[in-house]
Length: 170
Image (tube, rainbow, N blue to C red; front, side, top):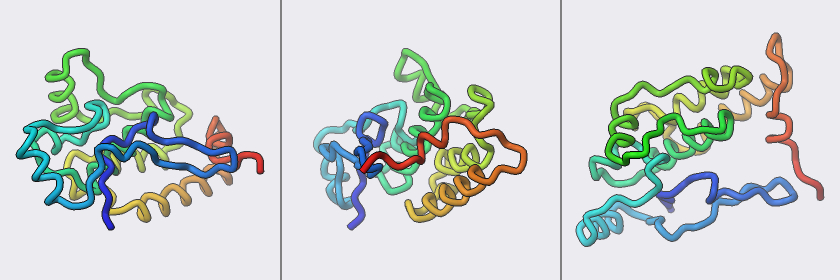
């Protein structure tokens, strides 16, 4: 089954004390493009939190694994920087920023972000969905490699990542 969440964001991700990560709130999720297209025809609206929405969703293209991967990249950006990559109080202007602006460097806002993690964020948030990761297994592999690089740094200093990847108490 390919479940498309459509509202992936930090508020919908929880970490249990044993370190397990859970995705919650599947109220806007769908399983197939057929379900999505039926909803679109009835409501004429786009679902999700605008700051985490992939550019193609504003063009009323159906949600996909790639749109959830984009939202995951935005979530990582926010985790590392404490802010959104794009911000405007006006929703239309925010959409234009998301659609047209170059994706900012996480290191610009937090120089301690390891380059390998920033590269993962960039790939998740490519404007063209065909250039994004195709599935979570690809992301997981890159995250594991980036973490191994982080654990055994050549020149890079450790930051808050150890707390992020440390398992909780059992």
